[in-house]
Amino acid sequence: MAFFRIAPTGKILPGVFAVASRMVNFYLVQGSGGFLAIDSGLSTPRTPRELNQLGIDPAQVVAVFLTHSDYDHTGGLIHFPKARLYLGCDEEPLITGKAFRMGRRSNRPLDRSYVLLSNDQTVEEAGLTVQAIATPGHTVGSTSYLVEGKWLFTGDTIRLSRGRAIPFFRFINMDTATEVRSIRKLAGLEGIELLGTAHYGTSRDYKESMRAWRIET
Image (tube, rainbow, N blue to C red; front, side, top):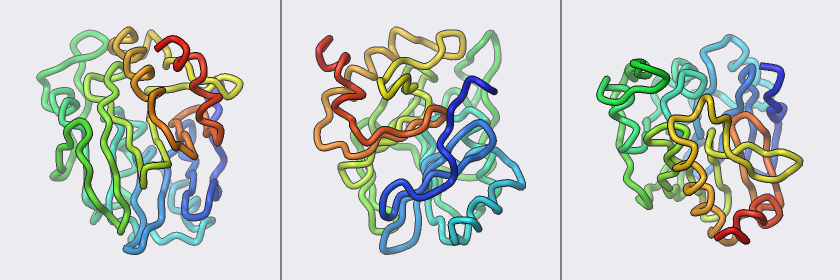
């Protein structure tokens, strides 16, 4: 979609990479035990080429953390068949037919086992600490991930407009009012060195990006 503004494939910071998957980004973070991925993008032949451009073997990705279960975030799991898979616990009803969006439609079931993460739960993968932060609104169980306490990946919870955080599109969200509360919660985080969104690139100035939300809270 032309109105998305994703980041090009490349290194953002030492050990942190954006991967362009048509109209969506997913992210890779390198640790001592390989790479973890935040989302997986779409199922497209472009993904292996993008990874090759970065010099990264898909087999080096040991874990994928899904921000939510929409297909543009899960379709690329096919490229990481051996990676452990994590999902926010409140998202599960959307892939089991117990929750619906846009009428009576659920998302596709995941084709492998996964670990459910609760709000504020922390796990270690690839030698990196990952904190799950429940940020519902775009979907019922949307989850943001804070890696090493400084790199925050928010999926579709946040758009960036001229570097400023704003909610995702109301017509796509399940509950925009809830998403607004989620953004306000994220605005209280300190020490963030990178904000990565799925469709609107990244920000290296978190305080400025979240300034309006900090004032409102």
